[in-house]
Length: 103
Image (cartoon, rainbow, N blue to C red; front, side):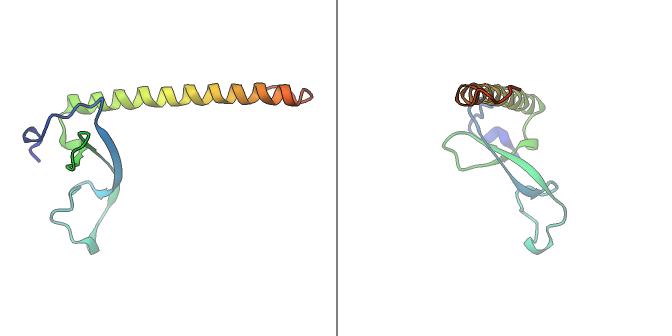
């Protein structure tokens, strides 16, 4: 697919989704739905407000790298926030039930 003709795609603001698709034909152009073959979890991206999804592997390697870095930051932030919520729950439980042992 010629991605260069599409509107610019900023990996920091792009929408990302995944769905099961055949990696050899992720857009299901030449595929008979009855004969899907091997489906895998394929990631697609699009610019905000666009209706055109682009298979991640159709993008330049440098762009894919930026997406991966973004996902790593988001995942680290998610787990950091989850640990903070867990500490807050533990503190509330310790105040509510002082006989409970702390982790």
